Image 1 (cartoon, rainbow, N blue to C red):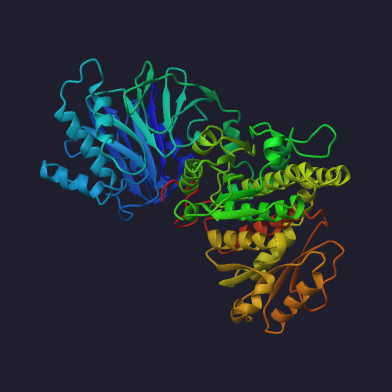
Image 2: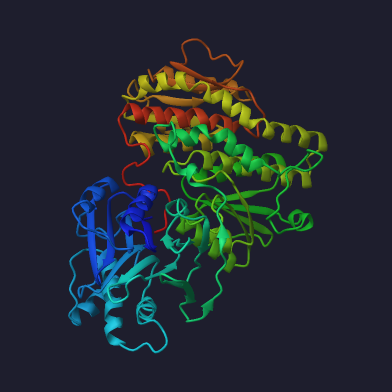
Length: 616
């Protein structure tokens, strides 16, 4: 969950490193630091807090070297202190290391190193690894034809249990970096007479669009002239250089106040990109180029299983509803973290979908590996080309929404909903859905971007609603059928960025417990579209008003809410059942965003959260 940047080249390293950290700050912002090689010495600057604090600290140092590493931290082992900030330096001063992940056996490593005279100045697991590298460097003074630096890192990693993405510099090896990964993302950017190591493409895209995605168990040794990649087993790797299709402009704020705001308003274009080229010529069904299963194989499946975490799990719940509703095939949905540790009974003809925006979510990656270990085919739904989940899956669907920087997912979530709706159509047309119904379904999907634009036009009204409700500290979100997961998502968005306690429930479940929370101090956001159970929804709203609970009702055009039941009404366009969850999501995204702004919260960097969860 931490951000990693490393640079080898001819430019002043610290300038490039700080720029990379600013682009990576959404991955962790407890502390930040840099280490620069100069005059055969490692100079380190690090500071608690945001990258801007580090910038001020760096100004006090003369960091002129052209090789360095930098890190922005999301704390796992040890509190948020300057001492625990990365980079960590070995007690002999020869090595500096930055690390994303968790070293599970660091305590035994530390005991061993203490017995060998190495000292420690932090509470982190990372410091044990940098000292272990120093130990192997001293233990093996001769490496033959191999780099002694690279060999010391490789040997140290043989003893590590856990996950890591690391970058290391050595005072004896000016102009060199060794980096390695295991279940934590790491990318090499190949520029003109320079190389950049990063945990995310956004940190290097301003320097180069040519990248190599490192695989688990690989180490890369970067020098000013070239780079080499080997495996932990010392096998040489022939690198594949990929071209990133988006540019640095996609990671800039432009005229928006926050990335979350920008990404909410990017959703019409993002949804168009998700759909582009994915409908049949006759306009009656969806088509996907990367599933690697024939229609006959798909037709033989009798169950689907979806795994995701957080927002992605909510998208899985919507996909479950739509597939069962339109394709009449049973669907199982699991939290990734639960699936990998419980013994779920599944039929032999089950296909898995792993949903993760980053493609690096550690729990979802673990669930993928568990499903494959049991012999199941696994598809990936993700937004990151070259990610671990994308590479290890048997096939998949890219979302194509561009980089999402805001920690609270918006455009990636509605894109996941779109993919789920398209999968439901794809399966349904193989089974019972008629050509005519398929055409109507496709027409509805293609119309979603314009429907979302209409909702976004209500932003000023929703901002005014937010001002009225920003003072509350508790809130309920209620919905039924396909909008129950959207109630969960609305509650999650609100609690993530405004720190308001919020809960999502099926509306009919309110009277089975949550109604005890209803009072004039606890508002409810209620999804009440025109549908076959509209009268039941109205009855639930009446139960809330009878207990003096304030209400915000999200409803469809032409639907009349009885007088006195809604303190505020947000209207969305009437639409096909398959796309209703997408359209209904946008107003609660805006509501959460404007409430957080009204409360003075740091929307893009909410406390305790990071964008990509790459540790258990």
